[in-house]
Length: 244
Ligand code: NAP
Picture 1 (cartoon, rainbow, N blue to C red):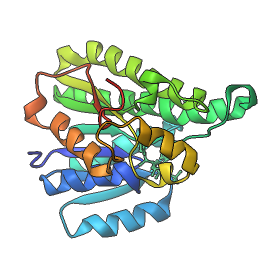
Picture 2: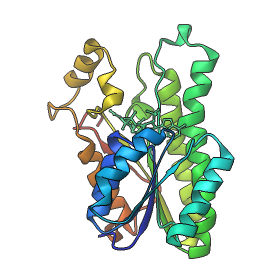
Picture 3: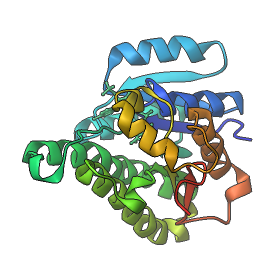
Picture 4: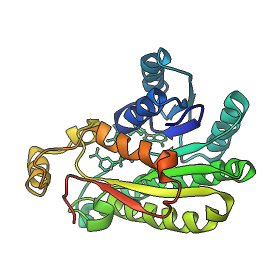
């Protein structure tokens, strides 16, 4: 489905990003794995190397110089940037009244400013190519809010604004921009949640199970493929029906 497409996936050293990378490479894509942690990237690259073409580049998405270098290195190595998945994300949960300014800035910087910076850098290359796919990983809490996550849910709601605005700006250049809003997905990020919070999510899921990273990767593959060529500015929820 993605034969010879070059896909850059941020935060792909582990979790949902790594599953998206694996799904894409199995479907013929050439992959740029990128993450803030070199150690994670080395393990991820070893995992994917036998399955196809993969390059790993360390990049902190909050640093515009590193982001520009990421796209430049991708172009030098593979010659194009066909698909961008803005997946890098962090949490720093606490109740609104206890939240420190730095907790707010940290989460907004990585989750929202990071997606903006990588989108801007990749879009410049995609505009020249007259084609591209951008997929932003939001969250269902960006649509419904969540106790203890005013910073995180604001960043994920902001991703939806970024998705729709950039979809409108880039549509005429052959570029689609869509978002995926996962619900509760079993990764290291959610493993850190207290048991009570996990149970609260489970109680709200009609399909009565947590999602797997592969559930999100399947939606990303669809959005990156030709099957989704007439879809832009949309949000696909992958949440077991948590929010209807
Ligand atoms: P994860 O396992 O924590 O993976 C996120 C990756 O992003 C980590 O490898 C992390 O590296 C990396 N990262 C953090 N800060 C970065 C930065 N400044 N620059 C580049 N990379 C950075 O999380 P996940 O569960 O796979 O989540 C992936 C995405 O899905 C996130 O955007 C998350 O908000 C979203 N999401 C997840 C769920 C869920 O239930 N898991 C639900 C809805 C949405 P370090 O570990 O070294 O910091």
